[in-house]
Image (cartoon, rainbow, N blue to C red):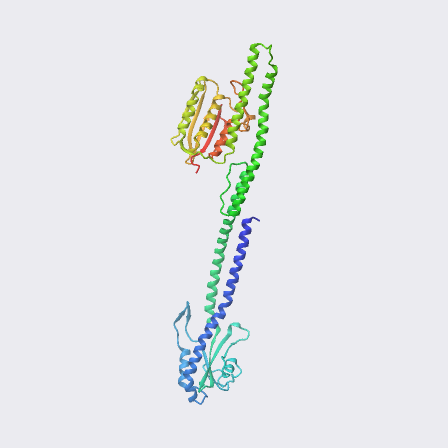
Length: 480
């Protein structure tokens, strides 16, 4: 299971659980809240009715209320409403009003059902007669939770004496449409909130692991031997880890680098040193001047070979240690090629080689001018070395895209033998020159490849039909 998924899963579960508990708490409080609001309104209603009928109830010997008040209450029940409350239509009153005397006997019932009944044991009447707040909620159908009716009572008082009770009752089902609407709205909002949380959590998890992915990418690039700089990370801990990885890479790379170079350099120096040793052992005082000159010349040739090898190796080592270019300028690649070509005029004329150049209409690019000149010089010198006399070499500059420019160097030599195709870019590998049979340091093409990588490009060398070699150097126009 990936770290990204684990962070996402853990955060989303915690957030979803918090949302569920929060909405569950809201849902559980909706019904009591609405009922408390209803009870509050019924208290005011009961006390209002009690005050309105007090004198009338006393005038009728506390046995009943007058027909005129009964008629008013009846008209209330029959009144047609046109109320739209939160998109819920209210068309008639669902109130029930009954009045009991100080013994709890029902003296008036707006429904006419329980007139004369003894309500003294019901909490609304019983508690109110005791001078306390009286209310109750009773199911009309014991098996139906939605059939409960809220009863709220108020005392009928004369000279501080409770002479009766007025109860106003209302079915709890009357507020159920409002409860259902709020629950539906909260449920929809909860779903949207969870979906939003899902997206936000996904983005957060991605953001939290973005730096880790950058660090992993850097580690993979280092493992593959690619030129890469440590990523710039916002997190201090991960930034310190990146720096530690870079230091470790430098230490390991330096050790491996030295080991590889010592091994390869030792191997390459073996041959010229053996030649020098052999020549020096054969030189004697009685040797003829001609033989002496021959062996001295061999020693000088091999010494120059060692010197050239060491210099090339130092140049390549310095280049390979670079992770990015520091001497960047805007250059005209056409002009750079011209300068290289001018430096090769003498050797081209010596071998009667015809050189043609196709310039780019868009030659400008950002580069290290010296390194680009060295790379093109190596490619052209390589083409000259392997070109027969009276042949031709072609240099072509063209745009591969708006972001890349290509330098191609083609010759008409014998081409690269099949067995050497996958070795020509290896360090110290060199093919004998056709004219002399001698080999170079074997570092020139490695040098070109390193320059290509530093310029965010690539280098490819291959045979072309019908004969000859095509070396293609691809470079990025912009490096920043």
